[in-house]
Length: 428
View 1 (cartoon, rainbow, N blue to C red):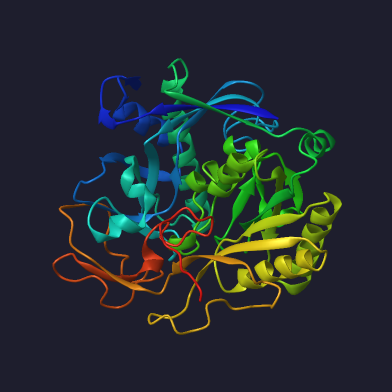
View 2: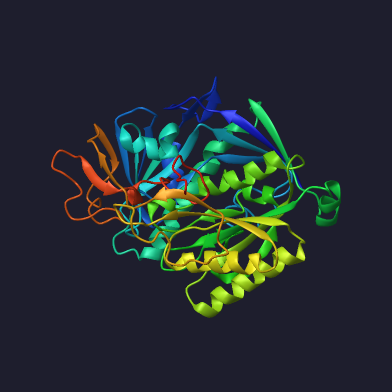
C-alpha cells in the first residue's frame, strides 16, 4: 500500500462565518459545528471553545484528542467502519491538519480522564499544549448510561474532526510524505539483506470503558492480525477508552503513531519494516494466552528478526506485555518493549506488575506516580469538579485558588507508551 500524507499546517484557529482554511488559519463556523454535533439526541448541550498554545487555559476532564484528516483520493473514508463504510484504507491521498486538534470534554464518563494545560509546568508534559485546540464541551441528557455517554462523545469528536478536515480537501499541502509497504513477499525481497522488523501494537480492550476500535469493531472481539502501517494513518484504529490519562492512546496518538513513523524513517536504510501486528489486552488468563500465542505465531510466520512491542495502560495489561515479549523471544526473535512505570511517588516500587528475564530491552515513558503542582489558570474549559476523583487526583488535589496537586497520571499523554512524550529513564 502506498499513502501520500499531505500536511496542511494550521498556525491559528478562529471562529468565522465560514469553515475554511486561509493563510494557515482555520476558520470555524461555530454554530454550524454545534448543529452537527447536536444531531445526537443523547447530547442536551454542546458548546465549542478554542484553546491556543501559551494561553492561560486548562481543559478538563479530557476524553479524546483527534487530528482532523480527510481522504482526498483513494478507497474508503477516514475512520472506516465508524463514520465511513467498512472499506480498507491506507492508500491514495490523505490530508492532515497539522498544528490543531479536536479535544472532547464535558461531564465525566469514567474516572480516568485527564487534564491539558496550555501553559505552565503541566503544559510541558502533554504534546497537546502545543496545538491549536477546538474543544467540544458535550453535556449528556439526564440519566444517560455510561456506555451511551462515551459513545456519543466519541462520535462527537470524530464528526467534528471530519467536518474541520473537509476545509483542507482543496488546499495545497505545505508538505507531502509518502509511506509505502509492499505485499509481504515483495517486501521481504525488496531489502533481503536488512533485518526484518515488525511492530506489535497492543490495543486496550479490557472493557468497562477500556475499549479500542478497529474498523469499528471492539478490539476485544478480534484475534491478533496483520495491518499495513498506512491503515493506521487513515483512522483504522480509534480510541474509545477511559484508561489513565497519562498513558491513554488517544485517536490523535493512533493517527500519528511515532513507532510506525520512526520505523518508516529507517525502512530501507537500517531495517526492513514488514508491517504491524495488532493484538488485544484481555482480562481472563485464557484470552491472554490465546492472543499472545497468536501474536508470537504471526511473528514467526512472517520470518521476523525483531519486533517492537507497545502496550496501553498498566497493571493487568503488563501481563499481556510480558507474555508477548517472552513468547516472541522464545521464537528466536529479538524484542524491545515500550511501557511506562507506576513505581510509587518516590520511584522505589516495582515498575511493572509482571516481569521476565527475556524482557531485557525496555523503553520507559516515565513514572506516572510522580507528583506535579499545577498553578491556577485564568480560564477552565470543562469543569474542575472532578479533579479530586480522576485517576492521579486525590482528596484535596484541587486548592481554593484553583491550583492542583496531582500525579502525572492525570495529565493527558504525559507517560504515553508509544513514546509520544518527553519523558524516559536510563538504567545503569
